[in-house]
Amino acid sequence: MAVPWRHCWRRSKGATCTRLLETVWCFNGSSAMFAASLLRRTGTVAGWRNEGLSSRTVHTTSLGNSILTRLKSRLLYPTPKPCCCERIHSDAKLKDPFTLAQKDLSNLYDDIKKELFVSKSELKSLCDYYFDGKGKAFRPTIVVLMARACNSHSNRDGDLLPGQRSIAMISEMIHTASLVHDDVIDGSDKRRGKTTINEVWGERKAILAGDFILSAASMALARIGNNTVVSVLSQVMEDLVRGEFMQLGSKQNESERFKHYLEKTFKKTASLIANSCKAVSILVNSDPEVHEIAFQYGRNIGIAFQLMDDVLDFTACASQLGKPSATDLKLGLATGPVLFACQQFPELHGMIMRRFSSSGDVARAWQYVQESNGVDQTNYLAQHYCQEAVRQISLLRPSPERDALIRLTQTVLTRDR
Image (cartoon, rainbow, N blue to C red; front, top):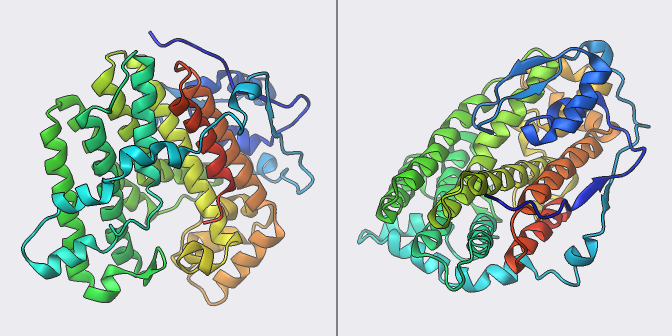
């Protein structure tokens, strides 16, 4: 059984939260106290199952327009208040996550290139294009840190299991293949500060390159030889496709629209992190509670990562992002800052439904977001997901890697690209 160590954050006393944020935050069973508070305030609950997010049934509240319009710029935002374990989790004590993972990832891109080895030079150039070692390797870093944290929790010291190392590599391959396909779908011309594959070689070859990377990842996954791990990581492929289809649509109802947005965010971004974390835990520990801890940490930090990515689309310049800013609006996508801004500027509702396709929509929507508290509210929501990630990973026994995963949540919240 998983040992509950200590909770790492407490909400500040007296801090208040808007009901919309309470609604979107009550996405897993661990927020029972938060949901109970909401029940006392509203008295109305509609049960729904959030596909793929957890094996448990969760609840949210039905919000009317009268509640949604109560959001005002003067709302107080609760801030995480470190508890007594700050002494253990202080930056002075915690190692940099990327430095700690560096040894396990030193051959990451060389190993990937070996998996993608082909004799045809053009296909090799296509496949190697993004595996140049200049990426953040954010996902493999989480995976190897989670693997070592679970190994320590299970009293297993020493090197990573070969299968755990392979999962870190596979996570980067799946992620990169999804970027290649996304750039084709979105017609993007910049990625990671480089011209995209579809701009250099054309859409057809870009699609084939993405397919080839996925096929190589699937073969590496099969060689691990664990049917449960294969099933868990196969779910990622399905989620990526379903998430892409969800991105093509929207919802008329505003509370349903936010639920749709968060489900899409899980499938397109967080599922890969969550299921990769779960996969490495399965290889070393048979306890389902440990698997759930690993999954929930990945799920929560993955959603927070994407929420901050959506914030940066409104706050960072193109040179920081390595791609043009306001990209989501230009693609017709309503992300967190826009959805929150819609509560203060109802004019955004029509723009969202027509996917910002009319002349001047993008510029007006951008201005509304800048004048609203949409960016602050999205930041606040990302903080909540990071707090939940910290709560989950703190259930594992202390280790340098577990504490590095805690520190990584702050990296997610403070990144500028």
